[in-house]
Every structure is written in C-alpha cells, then in structure tokens.
Image (cartoon, rainbow, N blue to C red):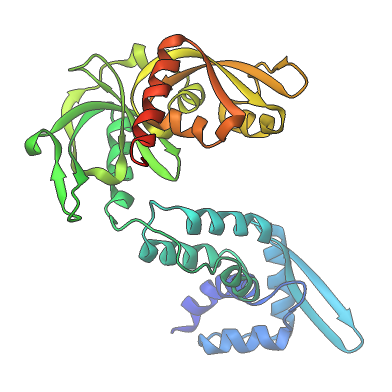
Length: 329
C-alpha cells in the first residue's frame, strides 16, 4: 500500500482495532497499536500514536488510559451499544421464530461486531439454545422488506397466500390467485409476524401471516382504506385479536380468580378495569374478537376463569368445550 494512502487510513485502522480488541479488562498498548498498523503496511511512531488517540477522542471515541506501574494502555470505555443492550438484541433475534436459523446466525455475527471481541464471546454463550423451533421459510426476511416498500411508496401489493397440508406441502388459497391489498403496518403476535392491511374487496382491515405470503410485489395503484386504518388503534387491535384469529368483535365480561390478575393485565392491558367480585375473584370487561383462540386462552386457566356475558359468547364457549369433551368419551 502506498505510504500516502496508508497514512490516510491510519486513524480508521486504529479506531477499528481499539473497538474490536480493547475493553476495560483488556487495554492495548502503544506497541500493540504500532504492530497492528505495521500489519497493514503503515508505519507509525510512538508520538504520532498519542496524537492519533487525541484525534479519536476529539472525534467522540471514549478512550480511557490505564497506568499501572510500568504498564500503559488504552481501551474504549463506552460504545454506541452497551453489552446488556446487545444481549437484548441478540436474545430477540435468537428467540424469534420467524427468522430462520441461518439468518439468525448471520444477524448475531453482525451484532457481535458492535462489541469487543471479548464481549462478543460472551454474547455467543448468552444465546446458545438447543432445539429452538425456527421457521423454515427464509423468504420472510425479504417479505418484510417488500411490504415496507408498498407502505413507503403508498402503493398496494399483491401476493399469494398458502397454508400447509398434512403432508407438509403448500396449498395456496383462492386456488393460487393473487390477493391485492393496501398494506399499512406489521405487527408481531404470538411469535409470528403479521401484515395489517386494508382489503378493498371486503371493505375492512385484515391481517396476514408474513411467512405464509409468497410472490409479493407492489402494484401500480395507490393504497386505499386510509380512513379505516387511522381509526385503528394497533395496540388495542393486538389485545382484541387472540392469536390473530378472525371472528366477531364483542364486549365480553370475564370472571377470574384473584391470582390471575397479572396474566389478565399482560393480555388485556394495564388500563383494563379490575372489579372485585367477592373475596377471591374479580371481573373485567373488554372488547375482544371472539374466536377459538380466545376460548383456548380462557380454557388455559381451567376453573379459575369464566365468560360471564354476553350469552352468545357463553353459548359458543359451551359448544367449544363440548366438541373437545366429545373427543374424550
């Protein structure tokens, strides 16, 4: 490398080395910095390294000096992302079912570059989990990007939608015909990614699992349904729709044992009104989409949870339980 071009890159090589090879427990010496530069055919003197460190500090890099006896070293004290923040990011990627294992590994490697090489090893140990179920459909990684393109360009998108057969083969709905909708948002529910869109054909908001969408492309047609989406509270929508199952929205009254307060608040939100009902129970009223998934949530609490009103929801719950009980004569 010519000397002039090498000197221009000198600060960049020093910054990269400090970020990757130093932390509070592993300061690096001026001798190590000079050796690193020499490996890239860049000559440097001790005094010039001191000047370079001051330049990096002026640039904003938080470089601290360590002096213990005859030892003098430098390390990056703080970074754009601290280790606990990186652990959160890595854990989120690792636990996301909709990201394939291959993409998970690639993303984690990129996140590790934001830490020192020593902390990167801790990140790797932090996220090692065996037998974690991951999606087999890697296209979801690009589906999200295609959906965002439709949203940012204010255009409709088209796609095919499938479900799996008992032989694990794809079976396309509508006999393989395209869906054409106006995308507005992406939401994450029950470990799955969903697109929330306006369906002009049915004049309403619909949701679709992103990992079951294929052949996504924008359509040269502006989105519609903006008014319907503006009226939609996404946080409230996620609370109402259990497991993103469609159904009729109703105002329901539920009765729970007192020890379930936490679970109810986690699902229905902190703003739901808790009304005592005797010494051991309480009731809540909430707008929910009544569906098999909602019944399954209530059933999960056994005899400690009950649908009180409306009668139509009570009847459907009774039928739901009856069908299940019929499987165990």
